[in-house]
Structure formats: structure tokens, C-alpha cells
Image: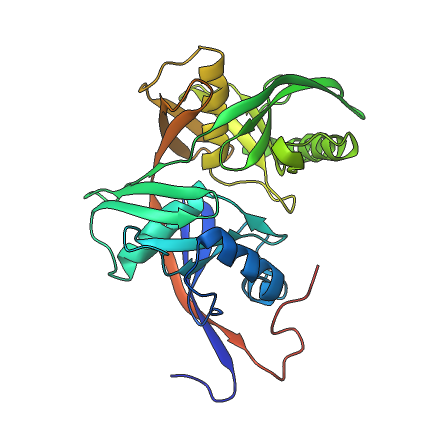
Length: 316
């Protein structure tokens, strides 16, 4: 029942092998029916208080990714989505796309089959399987720069690849740390130092785009690789990070060290896993696929009380 004199935003929470997603499904702003990247720009410029309301303090969850469910701009697509986190906006989020598909299934809006999702990064094909798995066929991904050198204070010289996996990443293989949840403080420390060095060195992606993510990779006894991913806002990904896995595949493909259509098992720092593969797009990009599980674990309302000075969140 709606409480008088307050605004209610209905949100559905889920997690994708440990990484949470919160999607506004009712009560969000009216953004029209244009292309989703233009609606994302409008949301960012005029309605950012909705992002703060569902993710910022006093409701803050540092690790969570949010989304605004939108009507698609074409009947060809199932849904539109604008992704955001505690500090800003994301062009693409694979774990969030898995969460969106599971949310739509929970709401009874989709059945098993193929569904096209309109994101600011492009149109993303998904497949919701009969056993509840979700496959995400990501946008074209590629390596931009191979083995750029960084002089990281307190760490010395490190080398990493800059790649696009739907977001911009620096991927580092040689960093001397064991990727293990027990080592989380050291992993956070080195990743933050690397990110600060990137920013101070003005190292960016194409068109001056900021490199928002740092991904450290290492050995796994049960998977092809283990990863630790520092996300915007300085939180770490509890899953292996879907866009990081796609960026990793782009680098492997560029080096001709992993063949198309083979299965790559990427393990995250918590031990959770994604299954990945790719096909060639053109001569310089790949088309990756990530398969994972997602679970709806909350359905609630965010209450916007006009008498509450922090109802729209505490700006950071």
C-alpha cells in the first residue's frame, strides 16, 4: 500500500555469482522513448538524484551496480537499461545484464529464449536458458594498447594491457600478489595505486575515455585464470567481472594464445566463476559470450520522504 505524501521507487535486487544489482522497475523518471544512450545522458544530467537515492548513503552498498529499467526504443528489443554505480554511469555491465534478465523473468515479463537488451554501449543479445542460466553476447571488444609501462609508487615498474570489454580496463598479469580473498587488503592497495598512477599519467582509452577499472590476473588450480577487479568507487567485484573477462579474451585473441569457440573459465577473487568464449568480429575485435547464474534476492520500495533531508541520498 502506498504511504501518503511520499514517493516510492520499486527496486528488485539480485546477485550474479555474488555481485549485486539493484534495478529500478517502477517510479523512475520519464525519459521518453529515444535511443538509450540519449536517455542515459538525460538521466545523468537531470535526474542523477535517482541514482543517489538507491545507491548512496544512508542506503549505500559500495559494491552494488544499479540500473534503470526503460522501455526499448524498438519493438525488436526486450528492454532498455541504464547502468550506474555509486560514483557514476556505466556503458555496459555484464553481471548487471544477467541480473536484469533474471529480474525480468522474476516479474514474469520474459520466458526462456533470446532477448535483446538496449544499453548505452549498444544492443546486447542475451539467452535465458531453460535451466535458469543467462548467456550474454557482449558488444565488440578489443585490445587498445599492449604492455604499457607504469611506474607505480612503492611498487616499481609494472606492465599492463589497455582493453575495451564494454568498459575500459588496465589488465595486469605480473604483480607478485596471490589473488585470494585472504589477500584482499594488499590487492586493493596495489590496484588503487595503479589506478592513481593511470590518472596522474593521463593514460586513457580512445577519445580520452577514463580507464575506470583495474584487473589483476593470476593462476588458478581449477580454472584458466583467477582475477581481482577494482571497480569505480574503489569497491572490488565479488564476481570475476564480465566485462573484465571479455577484455581478457580480447588480449588472448590478439596474442593468438586462445582459440575462438573454446571455453575459458574465469574465476573471481571470491571463487565464483564465469564461463566465456569468443568469436572473431573483424580483424581487430572479438565478440565474447559470458554464461553465468543470477538470483533475485529482494523486491522492495525505496521510500522518498519529503521530510527526510537525506531521502535522495547524501552526495559524495
